[in-house]
Length: 320
Length: 51
Image 1 (tube, rainbow over the protein chains, first blue to last red):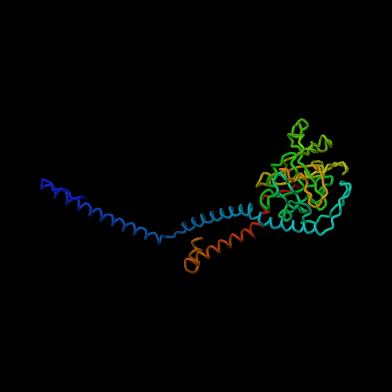
Image 2: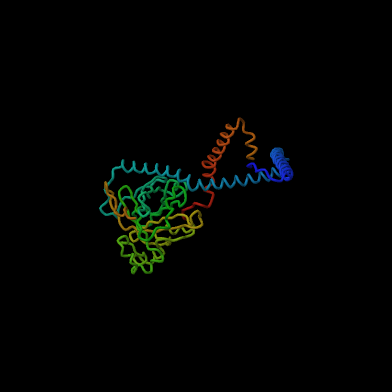
């Protein structure tokens, strides 16, 4: 405080100054007292009585937190770690397939592409490569024979006893939608006429997704049917008869409906001679995502095939 | 549980921290590479085939 100018009246200073100084002192004392008081309290809780109930409640809480962490870790495992493990297996399978293809003498495909030697498929071994150009250039998987959990960890798996690529009947493949490389993660996004390209040692096969159930009725008048991509694609009931009435681009079924991978989907007991059967491709995966309540099924029909040649890539591969 | 483990870890503070991290990593690895691969086929998440 700046020194005040001396005041004319001498009576005031004692009444003003002395009580104020005392007040400040008192305040300081109280402040320090408080500090000491709090310090004491901080020291006190160190030895609390550990009752049984207290331990039990804490143990229960810790157990709940631990279980929550385990569940979160499982999600991480399912969505990311299995991808890493499967990527390695898929790479090995692809490498094995590549070396097999390059070491074998490639016999030129028969002049009639409808007649070709049937390859013997070995379970767990890759025998074909699969591309879906609309999903991007990097979408490629080697397809293995067999659909057990072990096989599907490697990549999409071919249902045993269904047709081979390019054969009349139903070339059926299962694949994971979540984790394990999730090859069929986006299967629900496939539209009619999207290409699915399958490469074997000797041939390329171009399959195209069939018209969806809501497109079947007006397909002829649908402008989409005039697209170049849709050449050879039409509702199968109109081209091949009623046996194929239920075969549409996409369907969602219950897991027990194995008839979707029959030679003629949904017609297990049909007696159509092979030469009159369509060359179909069927992809199956779980639905909805993260659940196994239903199955998502995509049907496609072969529209083109090319012999494998050095440096040749089907033009369909650049679609997308 | 966690308090009990921490009190029973030997050594000075920095060593205890290292030991705790090793324990956590060990448990996570056990879950990831042994428990989850065993449990996963038994859970209804990822069946993709029709029968």
